[in-house]
Each structure stands twice: as structure tokens, then as C-alpha cells.
Amino acid sequence: MPLETVTAPAGGATTQDQEQQSLGTAAARNLATTTKSEPQMQGISSRWLSRMLPWVNVPGAMYRVNRRLSYTLGDGRVSFVKTGAKVQVVPAELGELPLLRGFVDGDVLGALADKFVQKEFEPGQVIVHAGRKADHVYLIAHGKVEKIGEGPYGDESILGLMANGDSFGGQVLAGSAKKWDFTARAATATTVLALPLTAYKAVADRHEGLRNHVQRISSNGHQKMNKSGEAEITLSSGHVGEAALPGTFADYELQPREYELSVAQTVLRVHSRVADLYNEPMNQTQQQLRLTIEALRERQEYELVNNQDFGLLHNADFDQRISTYSGPPTPDDLDELLSMRRGTRCLFAHPRAIAAFGRECNKRGIYFGGIELNGHHLPAWRGVPLLPCGKIPVSKANTSSIIAMRTGEDDQGVIGLYQTGIPDEVEPGLNVRFMGIDEKAIISYLVSTYYSAAVLVPDALGILENVEVARTNGS
Image (cartoon, rainbow, N blue to C red; front, side):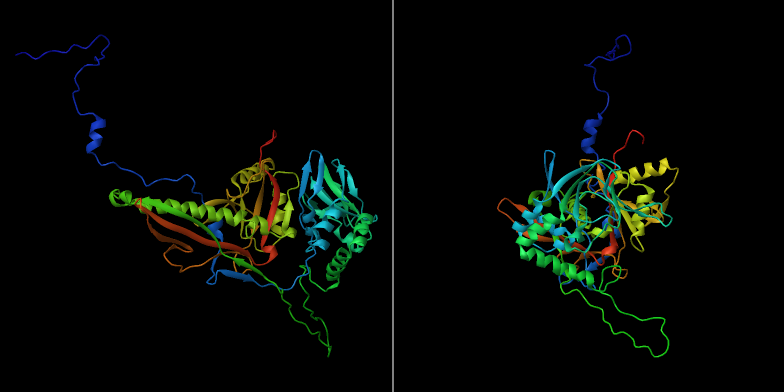
């Protein structure tokens, strides 16, 4: 019998009902071994902060930082509330002022807060003049203010920059500041709250506790101290003969700070049927644990940056915080940040802040270079690696911060804290504990990581604040 001939229609195309001549790929895949990857996770970051911190084992879950006794009278940072165009200081935040630190009477602080007067200044307008009578305390609610002094040849010299939350003139309350020793000038449109000395005295006369507190704190200013505010160790040098040598001792803080290990935890649940039957070629329980551990490590690094108690952004000393001069991070800003401490080991910034710094370098025709670190080629400034850290927040106003730190116990720097050797440990400071199987045949595991961070001396950690990361028309 002759074979039937199938004729293709014009154009070379076959009809839809033409018989299939070979096995299709969809059916063939049912007999094939599929090559597959492990479960991927987009939320895994480089975690440079966790990698650069030296980790110290804390067997007792508590780390005490002993320091020499300091008489700290540096200005604190205050907060405000805004209602329409009206700005008011939060009364409790007045306790951050140098001479009010530790004063907790809310009624008195509320009465004092009501005495502040709101004032607005345009860019270039002078707030206080050097050499004139100092009779106000000023709080900067919004904007940037330049501190200006006189240079060695009578020219103008910028001593520093103050921004949101900063204050100046606090020593006026103790009656010790007779004249301003610098000029304060608004660098941007600025809103300040001013407290006249007469208004303070009116409140202090009615509340003896306030007056006594200010007198007691201000008396620390008469203690002998070094430039870091520590109790001075009296020494003698350059003498000849049998000169009487001074006696001295190094005094310690009576209430040193203690850092307790924090914890991040979750309960991982895996159905027993999945754990029993679906373990080839990859163990389902191990893969679930791997991804869960990665998420916990990401949360751990976020807390190391942002935690209100031990996070780096909240533990930098006020004297170690500076603001960008013009907005974006410039080479000048990073130079000033590096100059504030010895031996800065690393800088951390949000990737957008690093990009903003790169744009500023490009404007000046500067290449900010790189460095080899653990096999990675990374950007660096002045030989200090500039490492990305996406855990540093970027505000709605497109501002962020850059962190500079010295690390290690031997160098009196910043350290990470954890405890090793804990039960069922799978990584240093992280354990996985079996919790049982419930009536629905679901297996539960408690996954925990214990951690904290400590700043051994104030100048180990510095922050460049108000870093603008948005691109402008000119960039």
C-alpha cells in the first residue's frame, strides 16, 4: 500500500493538525534531571560593618567600659515640635543642655521652655557678634549656623558649623560667659529659639532646685582637666635640682557604662512531610535555616547602626558630630571628619552618599582612589576605605550620614560584642534550638543571634551629618 503524502500549504507552513514527528521538550523534561540552584535571596548585602568590627567574646553577657573621670560640659542635641510655622522645644530635651544635664523636673523644664522666643534669620545674617554681651541661650531648630572667629592677620576664620538641634550660649546660665568669643552667622535660612538670661533668672528665682543644679554642674568647670575633659594627671617637666614633684592619680568614672548583649530571634517552622520527603538534591531544613540566618544577620547589622541604645548613629559623642558645609559630602568635609580622630580605620556610607561624594570629586577633577581590602577593590579617601552600608538611613529629605571609626580594643576603638560557645551554636553568637513538633506535624526551631557594640572612648566614632545625596541640576 503506498504511503500517504502530506502536502504543506503555500508559504511552507504546516497545518495545526499535522502529526508530531518527535518527542517534545515539555514531555522530555519529565524524564530529565533538572539542574537547579540553591534558593536565592535578594536581601543579602555585603555587610561590611559586621566584617570590619573586631568581635569580642563576652562570657557574662555584659561588657563594662571603664574610663578616666571626665567633666563633660559639651553641648547636647535638643528636639523640637513644629505646629504650622511655630516651633517649640520639647521641655524634657532641655536636659541635653550642658548646665541642665540630669535635671528632670518636668514642670520646671516646661516653664523654661515657654520662655524661649522664636527668631528667623536669612542667609548671611548675624545672630550674635563677637565681643558683645552674652545674655541669651540659642537653640537651632532648623538651618546651619557658622561660628566665625578672627584669623591671625585679622581676616575671617570659620571655627565650625552648627546645625539642627545644636545649641550655643549655654554657659550664660551660670553667669560665666560675659561676652561672645565668636560670631554666629546664618549660613542658610535659619530658625532659632532664644532664651534671654532675664527670663531664665525669673524661673530660677521661683525654683531653687534649678538654680542649685546649675551651680553644682558649673562648678565642674573649675576642676583641672585636659583638653579631652578628663581629670588632669599632674606632671612636672623641665625642672632642675631637687624640685618638689607633684603627687597625682588617675581618677575613674564611678558609674561606667555597661553594654548588655541584645538579641534578634525568630521561630522557623518546617512541616515534617517536607523535611522527610523533599531532601534531594538539597536538604530543605538546611536551606530554610540558611536563609533565616542570613535575614537575622542583616537585622543584626541594622541594629548595630540604628539601635537607640547601642547603635553607632546614636552613640557618637556630640563633639564628634559635624555637618556638611554646603550639603553634599565634599573632600573638605571628609578631611575634617578624619582630622577629628587618630587612626581612622574605615568610613561607612550609604551607597547613594558614596555616589554623591564621587560627584563632588568629579566637579573638582579629583579621583578619590581605591584600596584592596580582603580581596576586594574598594573606594577610599586618604587611604581609608569608604565602605558601603545600606543600613545607614536616608531621610525623606534625601539626607544621610557618614560614619568614621577607629576599631579594636588595643586601639581604644569601636568593637562588636557577642558570646561564643552558647548551646546549639551553629555560628559564633548564633544558635538554632529544636522546639518540638506540634499536633499539625510542624517542626519548630528557635533561631537566635546575640550581639551589641561598644565605643571605648568618644573620639573612636565620628559622624558626618546632613549629607545630601540627591542629584542637583548642576550635578
